[in-house]
Length: 88
Image (cartoon, rainbow, N blue to C red; front, side, top):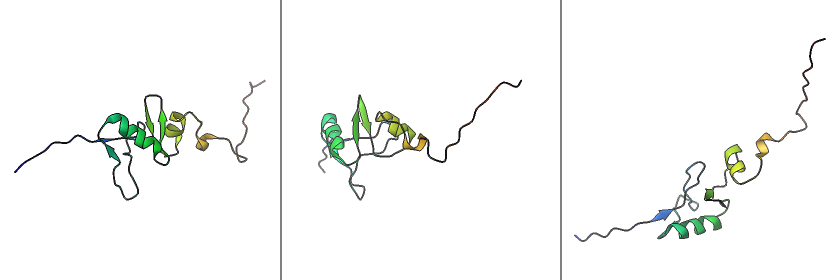
């Protein structure tokens, strides 16, 4: 039986390792690394950063990697202020 070897490239998130895929778990694969990265940057939620890719997950690590602050760490109306003073 004849056998042929093929090499495929699937882009992954540099933060969590999630593979770039379509709905239903169908991987978006390409024949070159550059093409896989380009395809991932066109996928919804994926962002190219210097030297890598970040998927659309919103948590502290992903948000900071994309160059923004995490909305999970922003103060809200419920935030309280605390002061520490030296005892007199």
